[in-house]
Length: 264
Image (cartoon, rainbow, N blue to C red; front, side, top):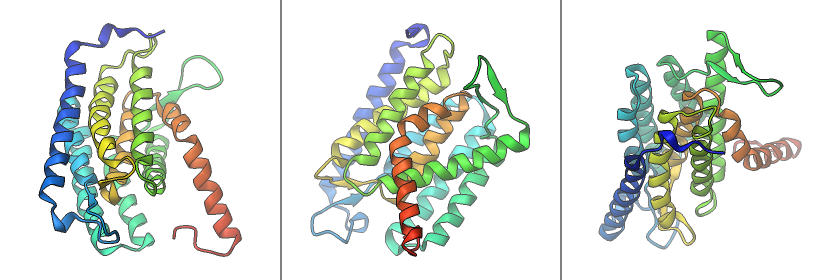
C-alpha cells in the first residue's frame, strides 16, 4: 500500500530529534517555573507553552521549504501568531479582535503563495485545478476554519494536541502512497509529529503545559499549510477533523437558536 522509497533514515532521525529537543525544552521550562508564563486561572503550576511549540516546529520547517515566498509566509505568520497569541493569553482579546487577527494571518499566508492550486477530484481520477483568485479565497477560508477548529478543541487536556498528532500521521501516510510520493509533505509532517509527540506527554491529563491561543492557532495554520503544499491532502485533514468540526457546528447552531453569541 505504501511506497517507502522516499523515506530516508535521516527523516526518522529528524522526527526523533524534534521529539527529544521539544521534550528537553519543556522539561527545562517546568523545572524553572516561569511565573510570567503561568496559567493564572488555576492553582497548580500550568504554563502556556504553545508558542514554544510553534517556534520549535516552524524553524526547521522554514528550511525544509524550497520556496522563499512560502518560507516568508510561514515565518511571518508564526511571528504574528506568537505576538497576538501571547497578548490574548495575558489580556484576553475579544472574539472580534481575535477574528480580525486571524483574517490578517490568513491574508498574509495567501499573499506569500500559500494557495490551493488544485484538489483531488472526488468524483473521478485526476485533480481539479482552481483559477488563482478561487485558490486564494479557498486558502483564506481554509486557514480560518482550521485555526478556529483547533482553538475550539483546546478546552480539554491533550485533545487538540492528539488530534493534530493524528492529522500529521495521516498526512505522512498519504505522502507515502504510490500516487503521491511527496517528500516535502512527509518531512514537514514528521517534524511536526516529533514535536507534538513530546508536547503531548506534558499536555495530556493532568496537563502541565497548555497550547493557549498561540499554540492552537499555530497548529491550525501549520496543518493547513502541510495539507495544501502537496496539493491534495485537504480531504485528509478534513476527515481527521470531521468530528470536531461537526461538533463545533452544532454548538454554534445551538447557541444561535438559544439567542446567545456563538463565539463566546
